[in-house]
Image (cartoon, rainbow, N blue to C red; front, side):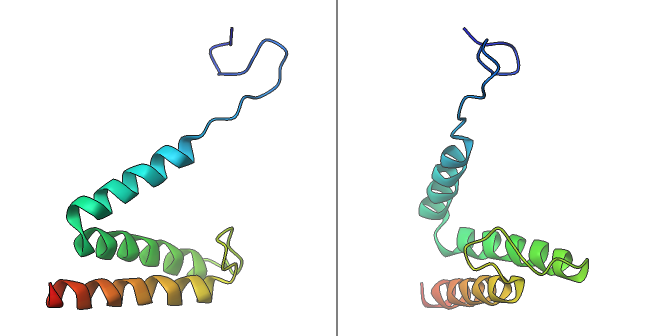
Length: 88
């Protein structure tokens, strides 16, 4: 039995694998829409990190850590998606 907040009666927190659902949804969209989805997600990510970097964020929770590397990675993904769209 859990409370309305999703915590068990003992007060401990249960693991919510929401990120796994999000990853599966993004993978599905990329599979269905191909390089257009990759371009859209790379563009959204790039815009978000660009705004965050301008606001002072220099370290990210992303595996690449440095926001400059994250921006380069997302830019490369976007460029690869454009090439794939043109080639497709």
